[in-house]
Image (cartoon, rainbow, N blue to C red; front, top):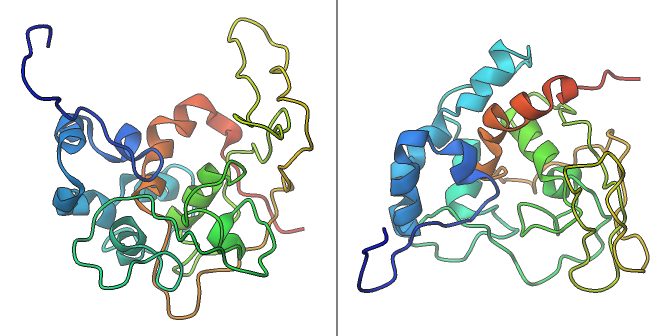
Length: 237
């Protein structure tokens, strides 16, 4: 809009990871980016019946137990996980990445966050070491509604460790070479895990919450096309 005048215009928004990139259909992406979170009920149909569930079941053969009326996804997408990061007296459900700033004590780190039994991890905020791709895949695949699984993208750890100082992450690959990315600033490696077999601890008792809308279709346009056979479900040893 080279001739636009007046107040700033909202052209993008970001709550849970990969919502607009893949979850929201192409024809309504601009609309979703322009609306306020209080209007997010308009996105409910895409959450209640996520396309990724059909792709996992019909293309990848995953035994997704439920394809419609995914209230488990709606809870975290619009409200937050009860007892973890759902606000008290919630008045206007909306798509947000919610963080309870009061750290839960006595938690063992899991790259799978809440479904790995670590209540300080995604979707309770998002830490650098949280494996959001695997978390979202497993939940859409039915992790919390009768189909425990180990779905993942076969990338369980970083090529380079985290640094001890901001910005903590290593530099990205240049795209023109095949060598590993340069290491992060000198410091201890903060990332743990990477065995692909982290057990699922589930949400707190009584919770119907799941990872938010970001877990829905992000692989439909992302991992399915970029990684191909990288989508794996390890067999039980």
